Image: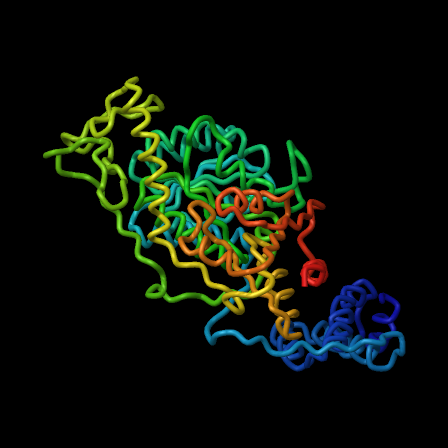
Length: 468
């Protein structure tokens, strides 16, 4: 490629070193030929970008045309691709990765709620980019804290929530294990904290740069005793923005920790994202208790079962907080057996009631039929493309994708029995399939892949074909 670039630029008066740098444009020209893309927009950009250095502009433009001509003249390429225009809604778009979208979603939630965001984190791959991105946005009232360890980060986020901030933390892999005890403290104190778990291949240190979906059961059950939390999972890189907002909406309305399950594939993957208008975003209404009359720290909202959010220092709202079991309503430390059972059931019921406040699950395809493919998280793209493949062939194949994993959408139990076979592709050894079997008594068929790589569309197409 260097030789071809130098040959194309032999008549341009530039040092050989500068000419070699033009080989990227030569390669881009070849790619443009392979994918039948026009040269004119890039040629205009080169002219504008290098207008103060005409020789460099001429060399780059010449290299771009030479690479295109090479593809057209050489007989070594037997395939020519044409990518059709994407069918997307009109608007202003930008490229965004999952971690960037998640960080912007946390900031948006802060602005929608009218409260500062506090993000505490210990650097860990692939979650570190969230901390990097948030640290740039101090102008939005964002406060970031690089903690000395995972435990400190989680406890700092709890402290921020106790003080009336939007408290969040992020981690991955073994960091989630270290946070478990403090997450349980947030469950007992019933404080609204968002934990962003950017899953990676494990166990232990595992493969930090490789993707996996192995933390689902840990998110649901990976703490001592009965410790219910809400769990959500974005489906695409751009969806990380919206699910970050949703995580805080749920956390603050129901006074509960919320775990957001992303993964390395979403975190580092990118897609075009349409910039939403503020009017499109959901409202986050915070209700801080200020009236001391009739105040009790565990007097619950009759609809959500959320306890009051009383900021320290508010006159007359002094109350006890900590990891010991609390007496119903008063919040005093209690060892009473009946009270403990009542509080355990109340915390569980509070999470269950979130199902009344999330959208029903939508079936992609016919509402009943032969095969239903059930996915969650980053498997969305591969599953949807595979299902579309079989639908074009007239096969009875549909899919649903879960963005809410605890609680499940209310209508999931109605959808599953309508299909003869249920296939569950996931990047673990069948964790969602296990939950579906146990909760709904259906014969969910796991389709597992734990290679540190996402599913190929062809892999899911072939597996569906085996069930038809």
